Length: 432
Ligand code: HSE
Image 1 (cartoon, helix red, strand yellow):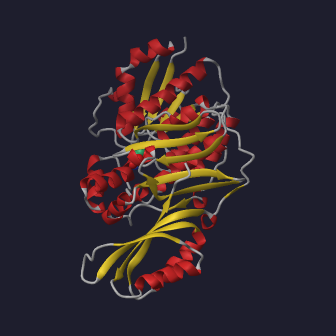
Image 2 (cartoon, rainbow, N blue to C red):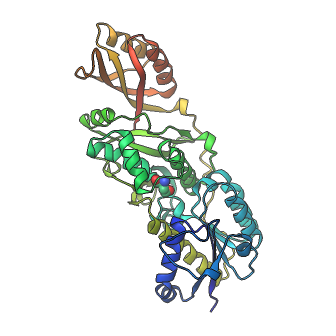
Image 3 (cartoon, rainbow, N blue to C red):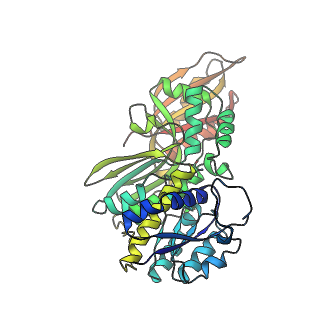
């Protein structure tokens, strides 16, 4: 029986979780898979810092080469995050014949195509379950459980921090800034929280889901990304009054031979399951042709949550290695029916539009005149009570319109002398 040696690069929050699970569930895992997983070495820049787990000093190194060049190590687990040097470590591990486990969604979104190609050439695998939805086994479900399916769409709440902020604002009636400060205190935001609130982290994860579901690696520059920093408590409350919840949604859907890939705040009907996802939870709603609609739901951040997914990858690779399986097992083939990625300007959607304006005769007429000029039809208008001297919020729901037209109309509306601040438009998603 071959036992499997693991080298861990990155002894931070998730790394500590992996160590804890491998220490405390050693026998449990051995009984399940019939092989022992031995954590041989751990590398981190800072090996003397305090951690929630203790390990023998002799296992620790600050030189990644001690893991990458160790011929006895079968699996390298990369948990340092970021692009450099994480990508170089993974390349070196593959070149040295090791399998790789990573949770690094940013790296895979940017360099994944090259890294997966290298792994294929070398007959090695890269598993990355923790990179999307932390412990929710959505990657395994898509690549294995749904292997016979073709996909029409994926709609995900993929960033726990943003979802926490939006749901705190909604439930606690608090400001964006207060909810963000709470999220930071709780420690699930990225080192740079702009990645969370500006939608980039969701886009990284969406790129990976698109790769798994549609077999295409979409470049980050081709994903339309808009974050939640302009969403105010007022919008959350107005949206709720008219039956919608605001969510930061990552959307990939096929329309004809085109694929829309975008991340933005979205009005979701209150009765849709995604509307009820609160706190740091993530949820991925998948349209598959044989099974139909599936919802994967659970905590999208947290040390043991993500570590659970990392260990599941280590176990899968252990099984591959013991079976002598040196073939990529991601089961990914390009969806030939997708011919291009649709440009954001071309998408059609209904919109929620909110602007702050002076309470004067003719204001609504001017705004609706501009919308009319661009062929945009208004479904409903609601003028709110006057809040501060002379300025009132007006909320409109628009019928289906082309993004390009909305953009041009907003440019004009924002130039009206009666409009304070920039108008806010939020896309409405109903077709899922
Ligand atoms: N910052 C991420 C989130 C953590 O808030 O979802 C896991 O990727």
